[in-house]
Image (cartoon, rainbow, N blue to C red):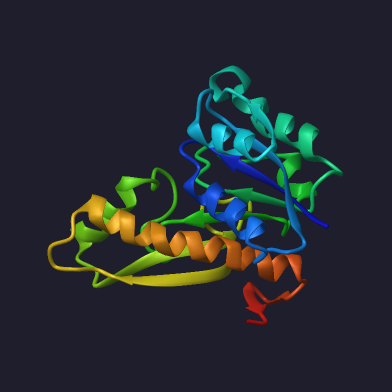
Length: 204
């Protein structure tokens, strides 16, 4: 069994897409062992509890710089993959070293556009519209010491409509996020990912 821990900060719709993919057997050899939130009261915790998944609420205001160490304490030796699904805190330290090439994140743009420090949530879509891009989308990538700088696993494109608002664009990108994240987990769980330099090569 390929064991996963999921980090969240909010509603957990990307978490739900993983849960659904396990329940409908798309991810047939995967299990979510833990869901960890950096915010007390995040709705994603309820989604986890409804599916009998063990949960932790680690308030980032309380743990501050030791948050990554606490996460490592919980998951070390117990999971194969760490998935950031709308998780807003920055990972650091030993967690990144011990889980090198075993941490993935979903970002709501086509990296390297509209990413990096301060680029999350609706801000990403506001910037995309402000810039006037015709195509945006989402990216699943490995997590390294930088912010949104790890190797790209999967990208899905979304056409920008003339009458789009940040909110309408966010909704359409989210639909693709819910496809991309389970796809990336499937490739990893089946050992179908390899590296050529910083390029990720996956058997589709």
